Image 1 (tube, rainbow over the protein chains, first blue to last red):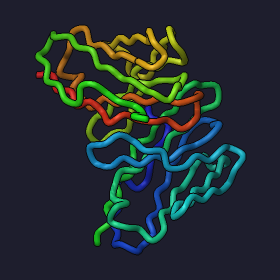
Image 2: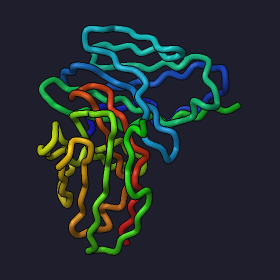
Image 3: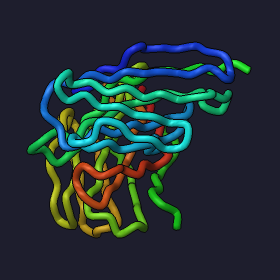
Length: 111
Length: 112
């Protein structure tokens, strides 16, 4: 079963707007990662945040982690049409040797 | 570096046929994974390997077998394909468990 659930399932915005996606998970984690998947392609790693971190930045990406609420959010600022993709969170659960992926958010950025 | 490559890119099988999907990585990664992705869903782990000569079951292992005879290669086999195995298959690798994973481009498999 999937560990993470992303919200919303789909998001449609205009170029220049910010996009926020949320991820909830169920068990304790070592870290949480976000991946992007362009249509018909493999996943690309975006950012990793460890369980003892609360916020992390990478370029136009900002990730927050709230372990008390078992949730994370991914913010993409000043979105571009090229950001159109599906975004997945994945958790490295304590005691396991594998990532568990969520169901994804489909982001559409219109010019 | 080519990263993670998968062979073939597309394949159509008839029910009951067998095939092997090949994954190769040139990053000297210890860990390798096979996932399947069905429409509207995230990735589900089929099998994984923590090193050469080792394999372990993931979330959905039934109907699949794997082998890791060489560190750089991870093979996924379907002994008797079923329509329920129609999916896109992704291979990935990582240096350690829980680290970022590097993905191949995928294999689109259709079982008629």
